[in-house]
Image (cartoon, rainbow, N blue to C red; front, side):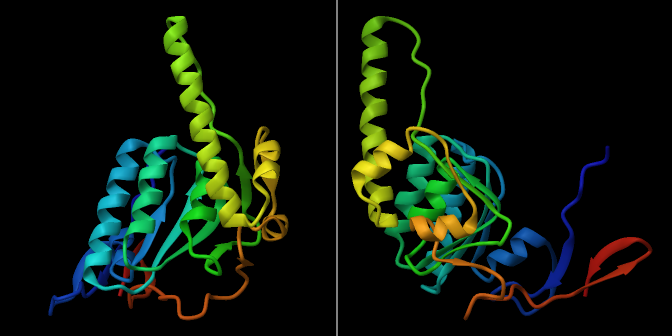
Length: 219
């Protein structure tokens, strides 16, 4: 099966006088729209952190994070979350597809309240972090203690972000908590289901597509 290539689009990068062909994901970053479309690993988080810091240095317009994220590692996700809170630019998060585990955490806690969205058929899930302790008993004890500390911290942040009581978050997220967008609004995980474009959201780089010889090209 042939891999799906990223379309190239013709647009004018900031500070440039000439139109250039760039890949679609890069073109959207010019409008401060970022896509996280995989599990959050250390490499993914490092790239997103660097991009967030760069976009914040350009101007302080809101950064939009579109998430289709099946989960990820706790520490890299927290590093990205910390960066999203650190920068001067306001943030918005949008779930398209799925936001599970740490992806759900980033959707809820990473976006400013009032700017956390989900598409109508998104799948959302939150739970406590898990670990597999191996090795000597002392090492297992340390790992177990650290896991509890991380669980308590994530629960506190989630409680603040959703408005749910801390004890309820601790109790309910001990198992996978699956939600559809309507349930996510009731829980405080998101603020709105997107059925129309967001007010004042960048529509993306100014380009359009047409097909020529069965190839998708930008104009």
